[in-house]
Amino acid sequence: MKSENEPVNNYLRYSGIGFQIAATIGAGVFIGYELDKWQHTSQPYYTLGFAVVFVPLGLYLGLREFVGKK
Image (tube, rainbow, N blue to C red):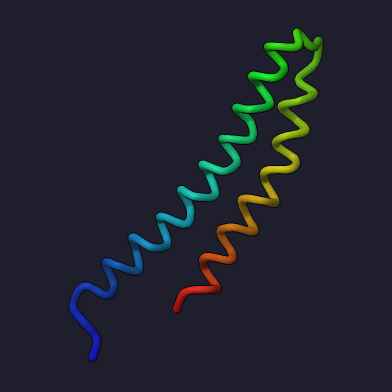
């Protein structure tokens, strides 16, 4: 038996996955930015490096959450 709140729960779940992906990428960029600032680099090498690592990580975590729960 389906409840009346199921569509709302699905919207919350899927928007939560989007926020999880954004937060993961944002955390990587923030860490890289702070390392660039601390190391006084001329170019944002750490920011770029952490973004490149955290984008696939965020997508993996989001897709795992999307596929894993039914």
